[in-house]
Image 1 (cartoon, rainbow, N blue to C red):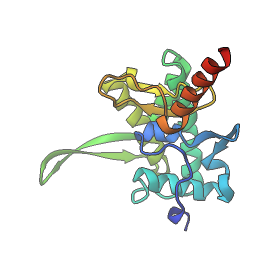
Image 2 (image 1 turned 45 degrees about the horizontal axis):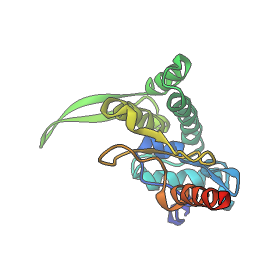
Image 3 (image 1 turned 180 degrees about the vertical axis):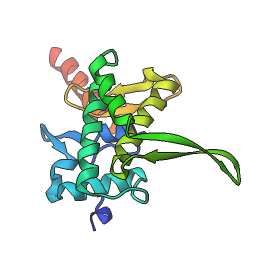
Image 4 (image 1 turned 30 degrees about the horizontal axis):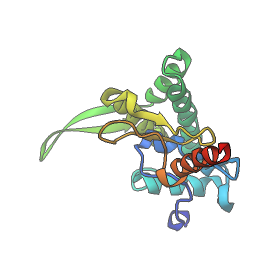
Length: 188
């Protein structure tokens, strides 16, 4: 099954909302999309890899309906992250959130919460939208797009001083350093 296939994305492990945005990335100057058949995977296999990578595979199925809802959420989140003041983007995120809710519960450990969905296929999309709200509530200024002009990845800056600029210092950060070095040595 596809979940045994390694996640081909260059940046994983971000909060679910940003991890969903990072299902599109640049490779060899072209946008690559995990949900569009990248690397010979079917769209559903790409979804299965993403669900596994984010820890959602045990709760949600990789099927066509889930993929459609997840693509809706990805577009809504991409617009909201790109322009937090965009009312239509906020409305799109709200439309995704309408498909689920948090239900208060009492567990053996005490008070708890459980997500409920009007249709389980909305679960991953709703989870990503809800995660975005949590990121906004905690530190909206730490939601960042990579500073590289040729990169489309997003990350949550967890650095102590909040100055992280690159999705990956070993890739985009090194490219920027090499470019600056080359520019300095060319001038001489």
